[in-house]
Image (cartoon, rainbow, N blue to C red; front, side, top):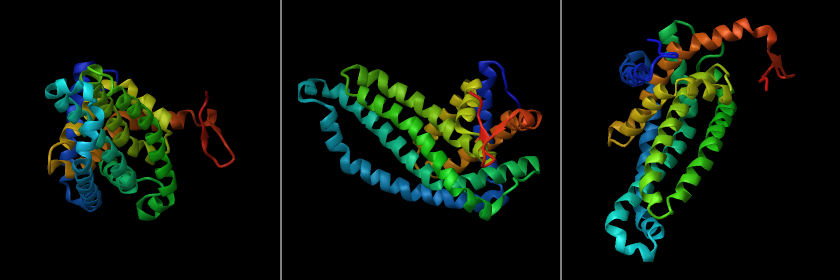
Length: 272
């Protein structure tokens, strides 16, 4: 299924397709060993996040609702609650993905190998250990991309009326985009495609990726199902990479190999 340069309607269908396909891949026995650990990590962090959220919700609500706006509390409190919930949700997601990054990379690799019959040059646990520093650096790049924007949205949440109406919706939309970036990045990073090129590729099919990220975001908010949504998203995003991007990037790399610049460590230097 290829949706490159297709209509928005087809891209929406493609986003649904890859999300559903992620569930199908999750059920396959050969992938199960690589799915269990991310689920365990997700469960432990979620328990901690829920405790932290309810332990601090009263303080945060009082901070975000000034005394002079108490007369609007009936309207504003539910909206502020939603804004805080969204903030905690993204904080939890960021931490969970940072810790689980090496294991999600292996899962993405195994999905790609199953779908294409081709493995990576340095596959398996040993290859993962060698790449852990690079993976964590990649996660840090994603954090540096997302945190300033999320902080700006959080600050705008204090603006009366605007902060309790428009900003929660904008935050959710931006969050869906971040989740598409987060999970699609694993197969891209497995092939050493840098963060900027990956983002540019996803932007070419923004509707498909936003649809995929929205579904991931919605299911993350459903109790019990959210325990398995991380590996589901990795599987679906890996299938998206195989069908939508893999051939374009790998063929381009082969065709343009002689024109690429490399530094002394044999790392690609992107042309400006």
